[in-house]
Image 1 (tube, rainbow, N blue to C red):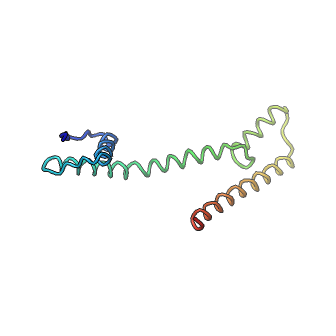
Image 2: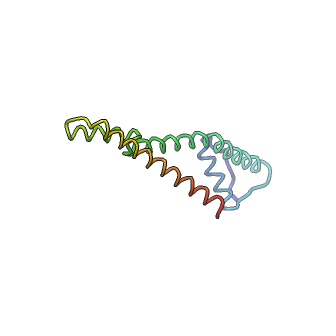
Image 3: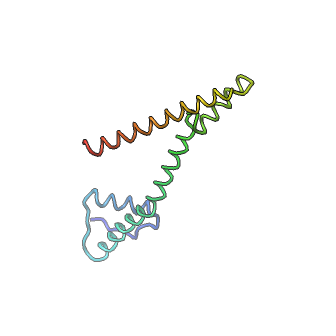
Length: 127
């Protein structure tokens, strides 16, 4: 059996070592080695609990940013689309055209939200 040395202070390395130990089934349960296994497991749990909220917030932030840049008229991407159209036409769009585009974008966005909500409910309750 291999000896386990002191785990690195890096939580990623500690997590990888823990997964290696769990995956291969090499539980060393005598004296000092048991102590280091417990330290590795605690390090894994600590690194997951510390990093998970930040990771979730980062993923949500990136998703919201990408969604906001979609060329739907009510979102920021829609405003960029209007600027592009105005740049090509060399004149601003009419007030009525903007209003209709904003209404269509709102209907599209609400439709996508209802569709996503329906799929979530269907997945939760029907499967």
